[in-house]
Length: 304
Image (tube, rainbow, N blue to C red):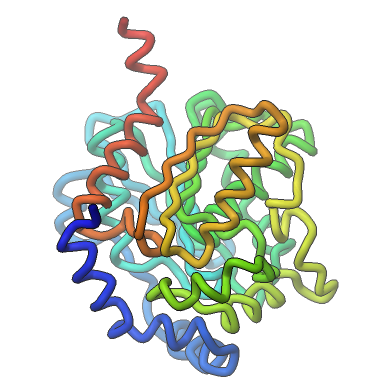
């Protein structure tokens, strides 16, 4: 049964205005200058007291790192969501801090180039050296790639590119409420749009076209990594909710993995909104523990 907190959250989410913005291309485009005018949401003072927090930059785009004060040889490359339009938001730091605490891994959170100023090719070209540097630092076997929404699509597309280029693969991948097909043409989505209190079809369809760039091809990988092959990828965990506009993407990925006999742990939460695991609700707490357990599974097995 859905918790009281989750039901209250669903009622409150429309007050954020995100649903209205993501439902209409004109409103989404109008929101971008305001979003760009805001300072990127950096980790707060409380996190500086608990962890070793650093900020670097690559070509003017910040890269934040949260690390245990004792250090760590493991890395979580976290790629944030926001329809490829919005930068990292304050709410992410609670999730990422919990991941550091639960896994004893260092989280690296890059703020990559966004649309409509940039397309997928420019963003992937920017991100690839970030991943390469982590491999050089700790080795690919010590890296988990993780992302939510558009960031989850980015994570899968990036990993497909790593495979195709013959590069070292990350140890694991975690996809939270993943946006894997930016065409927004699934027949289930019009009905789901009435249940999802954050996302809308019109705005996401426009953002997907901006992400595709001049070619306009939205139904090819890695623009929409759902259309890419899964063979040769590391083990994947997918978290999705049945009131999420992007739920069909996750379902299709599960079916595709089963057909390819690929390892994929699938966590489907009934009546959960988009990116519910970021929120302080019982279902979010449960999902965050499952995420950490997936990351820690190898260590627990080795200790047996």
